Length: 362
Image 1 (cartoon, rainbow, N blue to C red):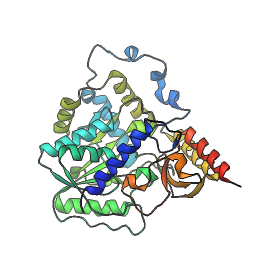
Image 2 (cartoon, helix red, strand yellow):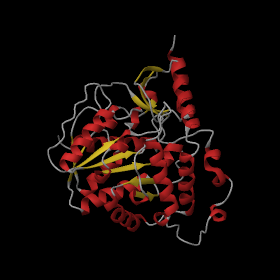
Image 3 (cartoon, helix red, strand yellow):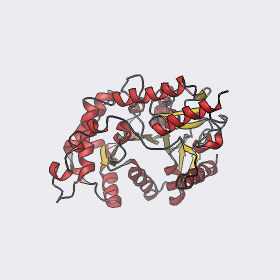
Image 4 (cartoon, helix red, strand yellow):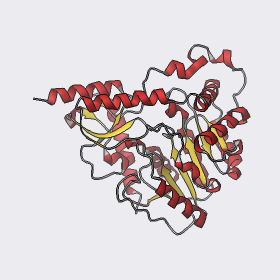
């Protein structure tokens, strides 16, 4: 399979970005931002105390040298996933986009000019692959959560990119698929990069992510606490990597991007503390309430099941020309006409979809 569909998907995303920046009266229901009543509680001291009172702002924050933070991150993953995790596997950073850029730079520097992937992938990967001259090879047209999904893995040592959960539709990658990948990794020595940006947002209250069971010596997994708390104004993410790769990737990341701000380092600690103690169940309850509001108001003509995250894939009861939205083409998905991604934390979108549905009724 060629890379043309992935790069076409990137072009579609860029077109939506241009449209978003030139408001034309359409309601943008697929946006990327969050909004909820728990921000101040989740921020703790950061909500009312300037960062210079919480840390020494005359020094570089040196987040990668923060062994206490790396230890917290390792403990929270052991607690959530029930798998061993060491600070020697943790690369803390200031946001997932920077980590993606570091990973793609590392691919190119280590001679990887061709990678395999399971759709969908975040459009920023397409941007970086195009810029770095990396050929992405799609292994299947279907997405892992779809009925009848079949996976044919290459009989070679390679790098494979996987997104779990399938964020645009709030579905986790089935455990059976992950077990198949694990067996293939052990047989071929292949690396799997898991884009786990929306992990740890399960609606059923469970905390474990099945991708944590992939062989640690062959897996890189990215986790994003800013998504976990839906507080995107801070930049905080981390990679879990095989121990031999930790130092090379941390060094590369620092030299590419520099250090984080003191505020971001403090937020990384706060997010890790929340994951270890309180969790994000109040946020997820709020997301479920938004979903229930849309359903009860008859704002949806049809919808896909959802069990994680805050994006719903559904067909609104609203004229398509009144909406700015990401449809299946933006995720390399076919066969779901009229379905779009809906941000369940976008209050304006929830109110607008409800109002448009009411206008359309006789």
